[in-house]
Every structure is written in structure tokens, then in C-alpha cells.
View (cartoon, rainbow, N blue to C red):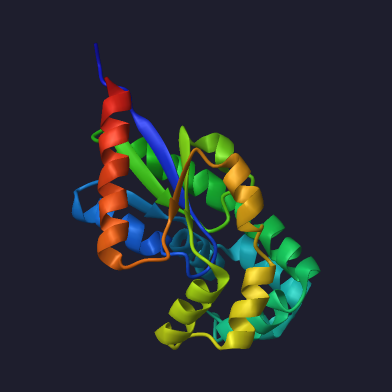
Length: 202
């Protein structure tokens, strides 16, 4: 009897540690699809998407055909209505591409992971067999993000406000791993998940 094949989503709010969790999976040889990278690529390369973004947010959205990241981030994350607008443009394309890549990976792999912050916001959960939620306290998440040096405290707060709260995600996720500790503890949790998944495959 063939082993079951699983499509696993890994999600979590900003600063939760979902990328570290997925990096452990990649180190173990499992394919990891990064929905955020796909979203950026679509925004940068899809002419139809570019046209819609310019129509909604203005010509300043792109400079010399390159994404004007600061302009778009300031425009989008300061206003929930704008978050909804950009998501309505990008999410259908992202879902389509993620699904296509998962099917490709499952030809040669039993388990494929997809890292995506907005699994629930993008209504992607039905594409997966299981959803893994990585959580951490607000204070820990903010400390991690600020230590990274890429975002200010104000940026963190805006982005956090535009994501569904952990309490709601916990009701919907299949596996929940708290990540208030160190990287080694998170790695142990990733190994525990692999043990569970490989057990479910038989």
C-alpha cells in the first residue's frame, strides 16, 4: 500500500518563528514552498497584477518597473481596506501557483511544506491536509522583529494588526507549537512534528 502524501501549511503571525521552523524542514530534505516569495514574484513580474496595483494605489507603486516597497508598505499597512485590496489582487494568483508547485513536489516527495503568514486571511486552509501554527507572545514577537532591524516598532504594530489574532487561529489549526523559547527548542518541536506525520503516513 503506497504511503500517504501530505500537503502541510506552516503559518504564524509576524515574528512567530515560522521561517525558522520551515528552515529545519528544508534542512531535513523536505521541500518548502514560500508563499511570501511567490507573492513578491507575482507582484514584480505579472503585468496584469501590476496594472491592477497601479490602478488601486497609483503610479508610485513601481519605480523603473521595480516594486516601490516603501511606498506600498506605507500605503497598505496603514489601512485595513488597502490590505484587503492588495490581497484581492494577489491571493488568487498565489493560491494557484502554490497549488501548482505542491503538485510538482509531490511527484517525488511524500510531504511538502508551504510557509505562509496568511493561510487563513487568504482562505488557503482547504488546500492543505494539515495546518501548523507557530505562536509566540506579542512581546517576544516584537523583540525578534526589532532585533532583525528591518522594521520599526510602528511597522510591527501595523502589520500585526492586519493579521488574524492567534486566539482565532488556534481554533482552526491542526497542530500548534509555542515558540517563546530558543531555537533548539523549536527544532525539537519540528522533529516531533515529523515523527507524527511519518506515523500518520502508514
